[in-house]
Image: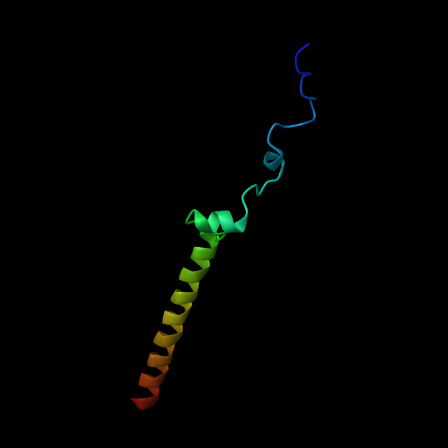
Length: 66
């Protein structure tokens, strides 16, 4: 009489089976990118490394000129 029940193996939302259900375009449109907090930490680590390199260069130059 009524609709047959869904089979047990089928999920109502086919996108739910994929771990990355949203496309990259949808993430960008929502204001979120694929960048993770680790990506941001990598950027901060790079900036710190650059600052340390400049400080070392200044110290070496100061010792050379002294």
